Length: 231
Image 1 (cartoon, rainbow, N blue to C red):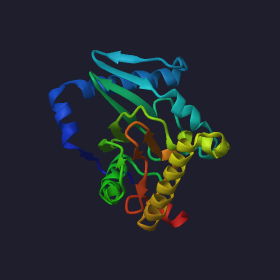
Image 2 (image 1 turned 135 degrees about the vertical axis):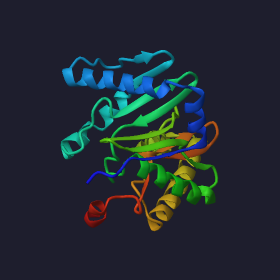
Image 3 (image 1 turned 90 degrees about the vertical axis):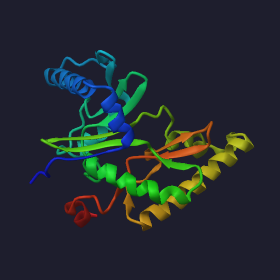
Image 4 (image 1 turned 180 degrees about the vertical axis):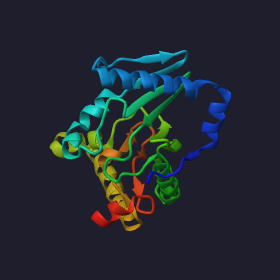
């Protein structure tokens, strides 16, 4: 049985909605346009949708990276409207419109998981949770919204090190080793405290600020019982 309508949001997101009347309606209109184009096979790669100063772009590269998952589980189809970049004036957001692929949490459960994670990560220096904004579940829909970060994933940052650490400069190699050490320490502590789906692909790295941002991590308190039984 589907859960009743639930919503969680930050004060910042509430203020954004209050100061920008009609923007949610514009987003829903554009989301519908994208969905209809997917259904009739006319959506073009890198196509952008706009209504006033609301711009919505399907994140093609993100979908492409996850194509193999659709082959694993037909029950969780990944479409071109599953992951979206939404621009409202100068504010940019990441919007996910499907439950978490691995742990099946909906938008509200992901929001609550990151609230727990934000508090837990205070013990780590230069590590933050992605700036989550909204979680929604109801009427057959789920949404998770966070601020957009235009940063590389840790898995890509460490790619050259994984291939040939000796080819890197001493400074670059040392930084990669520090990142790996921090990541491994975090991984052990997160797993021991009930957090799941933490991996290098769920971490952004800001080289300029030397800061790690974690996202898309769930807590076992939030996942469905069916997942716990299978784990």
